[in-house]
Structures are given as C-alpha cells and as structure tokens.
Length: 147
Image (tube, rainbow, N blue to C red):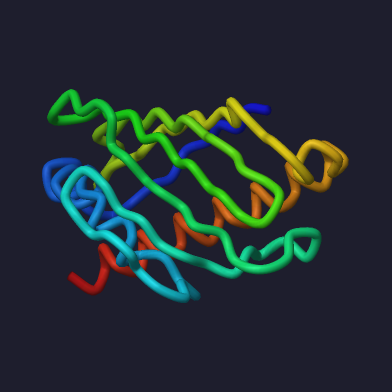
C-alpha cells in the first residue's frame, strides 16, 4: 500500500529541515502517546494506543531516520508491533522551497504487515492510515509554529 502527498509550512526550508530531520522533534510532535521509550536524533520509540478500533492493546513503534541528504531529503522507517500484529512503513521526504515558505513532498509505503493486520480490509487500513498521517502532520505543524 502506498500513500503520497504534500504538506506546506509557512516557514522557510532552512528553518524546517533541522526540525523535521530530528527524530526527537518528530516524536515530540505526536499526540496521545502513552510513553516515550527512546528519544535520540536518529531514533525514537514510543508506545501508543492505536487510533484504529480493530487493533487492541498498545503498539510499540520505532522511528528510525535511515538516510539524510541535507538540506532536503530523508528516509524514515517506521516499525510497529502490537499483540498479534506488526507493520513496517518506509517514508521518503523531500523538502522544497515553496512560495513564502516550504513544502514537504512525502511518499509512504507499507512494506510489511503481519498477523491480524493482514486480515483487515485494505480500505479500512487505508482510511485509518490517512487519518494517522493527517494527525502527524497537524502535530508537526503545531510544534513548528510554537518554536
């Protein structure tokens, strides 16, 4: 499954890049986390109650920035594990100057789903993923504005 989109920010790219390319900033932008387990520049881990009603319990998620090409490209791998399921998603980000601010063009691909997630209809997973993506970008935007 693949997702793609653009997110615009009113700040110039040179102000957005140092933040967006730091795993600590990204995890601090997330809402409704139960616990942050690890918080480093390249890696963050946290526990969260999934936004999806079809997943019970909590999920442990690891975000790892696997490649940076300053000042405008990076690759992130998200690995989540819960009771009876896991998933891996690879996200590529490209930061561009845009009008009076900047734009991030992103592409995400769910490269692995195991266990119970494999039984969930594709449409339901896509709808849930879109909601999570919107929430993540809203948190990033809010955090950028506050700093």
